[in-house]
Length: 481
Image 1: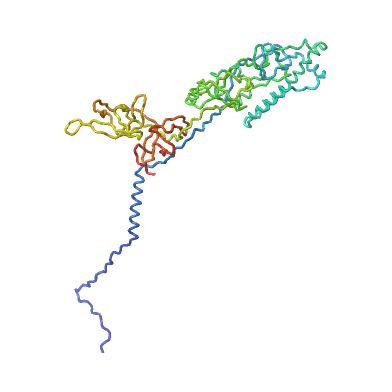
Image 2: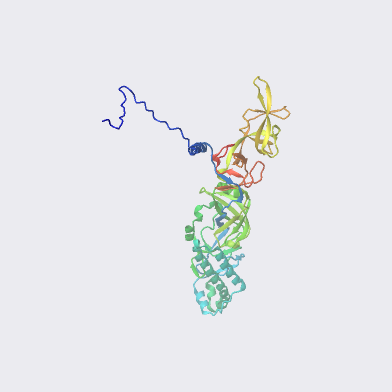
């Protein structure tokens, strides 16, 4: 019985099975195409980014330099140290800071100490201070409060000694009136030596070893606070002194000076060029004009001497003073020093340049030789960066001309061979998307910024954009921010 299922015929021997694989049609995806285009664009931008110059822009603003003009100064006066002629207890009667004439009584010497005992036994009555004496106290207190600094606390002890000395001297003035009354009864007059001023001057009752100091002898060691504190000695009433000990000193000349250390020779030269500088003394806000002189003393440092012809008596009891130099702050366009660059230019006489107003552009007529050997001329556009009125020459960018180029006057008669060069200081202006050199005139400068003139011909204006770092760009470079 035949089966109902049909058997599949096997291929004959030697017959190949001709089966072809079905190829799917190419199916483009629009999303993949867009992604590929964007990827290529990004790669191109990356390549361009690393092949072009980059810089940081700086917006030019008006301003001035914040210069620290406060200095610690040492005061130098004509000071004469007066010594005792006899031993004994010294009592002062001339007020400190008071001007005395020659042969005025300054102090007395009690050779035995009996004077103090005699005065204690006499009823001197109540000491009443006059208006002048009270005013002296008030001035001392006000001056101390204005000049007080927590960093210089040692000054409190100096003030204490000074105030105590003032009190003692005022009391001694009253006692002096009683001396004459007790002399005849006690015989004290035989042991009292009255001492008078040898010449006119302002009295001071302290010494510090700097009485003979001259401006040329000022060094860095003079300003050492610790060393100075060890040297200074206050002279007080009712103190036992030996013969030839220092009794007091006189400042004999109204002319005096202060010396301040300056940062460097350039700063010192700038200050010396001022001739006279207005000085504010921070102790009492007093202001005075001082004549300047730069000193180059033996320690290799630089110092400025400021000489005065008044106010010596005001600061006679101060060796060191905090002062502020009231200099005219030059205002202008404030730019960072990193933006400043020097660039070299050709100098062309004005008769060979035809400027186009104040646009910074111009024309020159340059001579050249044609292919057939004939001499001809052609007008070329140039960029002008400065004009020297004294020499009557234009500064022309070296990229527009070459050394030995021959320029003609507009009438074609006279010639000029390009060769002379000079350097200008300036910055790169980037307002138009490329680095354009602009000359600047520096008015003042410190370590970080310079103040330059504004609205100058071929120069900068406020709100211009310049390259912050001049080393990162070159002239006519296109800027990719």
